[in-house]
Image 1 (tube, rainbow, N blue to C red):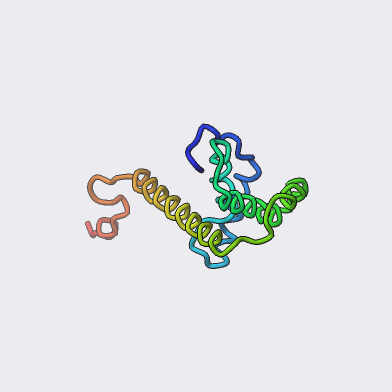
Image 2: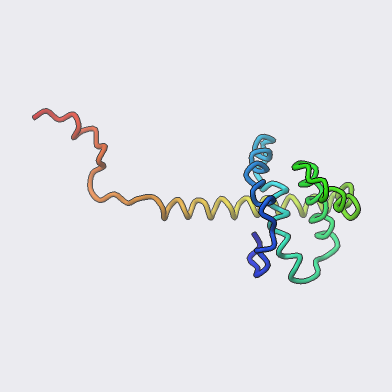
Length: 136
């Protein structure tokens, strides 16, 4: 998520749907963040200050796609009224750049956490095959 004091406003159902959205994105073969992740990332940012028109279009369009994917009726009605039906080529390029950036940041954080959470072994591994099969 966008680092902000507004991070707490992201609805739990949206956060819970990120894993499923990531699977949908991966099934399409896209090496980028899902549209659901884009909504979760941008939501706190929109509360801090006005954003440029193209980013409003991207944010609301992604929100509409989220509502269509996860069939949130109340949200769908609201999003249809404000979201563009399609994005311009320029807006799609901006969105693609953001999705790739979020994906890369997520992977970097995951790699770093894996490095720090891996146990460090001092000496030979307890599963050292050579020691298991030594003859006495």
